[in-house]
Amino acid sequence: MPNFKMRRLGWNIVSDERSLSDVHGTVAVDRKATPFRRFLAFLGPGYLVAVGYMDPGNWATSLNGGARFGYSLLFVVLFSNILAVLLQSMAARLAIASGRDLAQACRDAFSKPVAVFLWIMAELAIIATDLAEVIGTAIGLQLLFGLPLAYGIPITALDVFLLLALQKLGFRKLEAFVMAIMALIAGCFVAQIVLAKPDWASVMGGFVPTASLINNPDMLYLAMGIIGATVMPHNLYLHSGIIQTRVAGLTTAERQEDVRFATFDSTLALCFALLVNAAILILAAAAFHGSGHHDVTELSDAHGLLSPLLGSTAAPTLFAIALIGCGLNSTITATLSGQIVMEGFLSIRIAPWLRRLATRLLAIVPAVIVGLLAGDHGTAQLLIVSQVILGLQLPFAVVPLLIFVSSKRKMGSLQAPKWQIIAGIAAALTIIALNIRLSYDVIMNFS
Image (cartoon, rainbow, N blue to C red; front, top):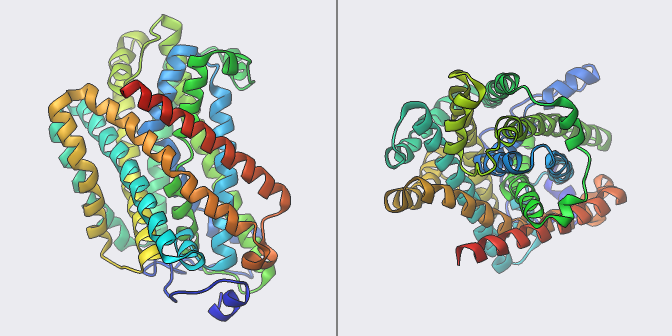
């Protein structure tokens, strides 16, 4: 969208740079093609976003929930996914309507001190996300190859070279790689669920809310953990940036169609993430809860129990492969998020590999120190801490997003409909309240 039109819509453009300028507008959209072919051009960004909804933080909470309460928390997994679908659609709408990613929009709309503060919060969220992925990948390497965490954590820095290789192939190839790894992860869990033989009637019943979610403090605590580990602030920045790899529509009608296609793409992808997260909980419920193993709280515990409980040596191997796959995928999304945040807030451009290395080192250093001093249990606790940090950062991404998409002055004819704004405010208040409660409880447990 031309800058003069954006100014007319109420945006004070600080800089003319484009989000992810090296790949901005590189995916063509044939406006004369059939609607289905036009949609295919928008298929991909949602799956990069969905990666953030399948990280080790989700694994830890879903495994614990399934082991302790069986299938009862499946409703919470579904509910948190609905909240994610709503907020991610708003992030895409913002980018398509304004031509700005969330970081650029914050810089343009707020004073410099406020923008700098929001940038710091976003960077902390990305570091916390990367911390979880570092630990998760290292645990996966330990489970699969017996590599000690103190060695596996530094090795995760080598994924920078994977990113460099993928970036040279083009953005569509990068998206295809992510989707292929997600399919591998899903396949691993399908195989494990077949081995676990869950009670499918109970699985269906788990998607119905129960009064125990409110009456049972332990169940409520885990429910808050699942929601807190699902909606992550960096994904809102990510989606608003990568959707702009598509050539933007020139007319209002074309941009309205772009919003529909982008929303459909992210909804499909998040439904896929829902299936994976539900599969983790179902596996834990069938394998651990049903056999009386209600105290499975760590990824390594789950891995060690799968083989004797399911009667197959393949189950723990599939578990470790899926965990490593999540770590590889997060390499891409964390780097892109960091690039979008730094360029958007500060207009500073550095090589993606350098940005990735810097972010990963900030995550590796504390993970290595804790791994050496406190061992495997300490790194598991650090994984929980990273989720608390993400919860605390969430309002600083969600609130500005809601302000922007609800503004007629800034969004023009693509302003979010009233029902979506009301639902978004309700979702934001719910997520923020639950994250604050979760963070408080975890901090009290540590003190």
